[in-house]
Image (cartoon, rainbow, N blue to C red):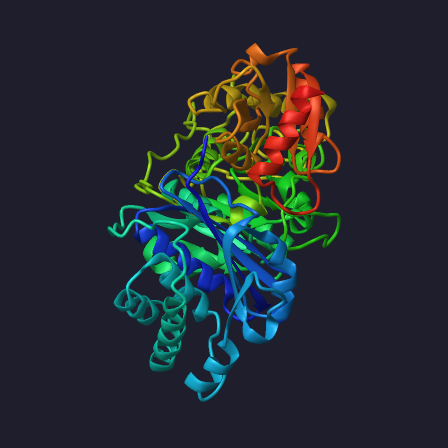
Length: 558
């Protein structure tokens, strides 16, 4: 079916405000009653190189951006060359008059206007906002108000420059290629995935967040630090990833709900602390936002290479919780769920996501009210034992210096193998009993997680497509053009066997962002599925809807 979608691409150098300009364009679309999706493509550079941001908008819900754009705005010659092939037929490509390559491009004297309206260095990226407003028929007054609200410095220069560009574009009398709704609304808000992860953890009672910045998880730290007065969460930029994880465990020991976040390379440094969480049975929540590896890899792009890394995180045998959000709404609710599950089961939990969800943004309505807190196991007697044997494997939990503890309680978290009391043991029978005690929590975690939606199914059709994480967003956009049933396991450990029993032994297509079909291998082990085709992408970029439609059709016809 035909889709009414409009895509804007803004390209230029790092440090020139490309991302900010795209965000303002996205906000303008939202205010005028559109759904939007924004992605940012950038290199690990402070200045120079080539950055571009894409905003796709529609009257209906957007799940991804599109590679081909209706409006391209290039601020340097490299952007012109990179994106001249990304223009849809009938689209508009604006650039500086010095960078024109052919008659498909619309020249504007941008560099000259900057020199005219700014006594010193100017903000050329404002031109993209002015061009968008002119092309969309947004009024001059609205443009002026937007510039004044979004850019606090050099307001007189910014306004005069933006209006000059706006008026030049209006004089071109261009054909309108998209009818932007003019009625205004502020019913929905614009969020990145990382912001929703942070808000979800807050809604579940997060007290402390510890991190050492590593793209694409860094903005969780930045957002919580920015909002610390409103949210009341203590944020610590630690000296290293290992320090961050150990600080978080210390906070858990004191009875505070704590979380850490990193990408694969940083999370590798947290493995020792993660194993410690397994041994001391600490309710640690971890955000693992993936990018291509190994080592530093491609630090600003997306991948799903860390699936087995997350599932097998930490040395030794102990229960882990691993789940991956398939939508922006789920990023919020899953952070709540995993925080609660971690505390209910006294087990470390990993929320596994990718750069595509972490740093992309969309608008939605969200209820961010706090939810019910977790329930702790209560001591069966006055003689408190930190690792008391129970049928579920979940022991009572007290904290030093709190109302829950008495002067006679011995609160000992021990990284060595230990007795119920927490004191160290090397005795064979004791080792066996404590390992079995921890393992019993696996069944308890499975039972506790069943109150949540562990699997999502989108659409209908004879073709079954499996994916997890943000790949589901890309596939949901493709479902606008081709029918298939999309099956998304949200919980990976514990694996939702019962909810997926109907697919056992079935022929399916598996889509993922990795060189090797890791998720397909995982599904074969858990469900004994038959993989008709693996659709893989491992260049750090997300799938375009058209690419997925073609790949799925080829797989069906094979």
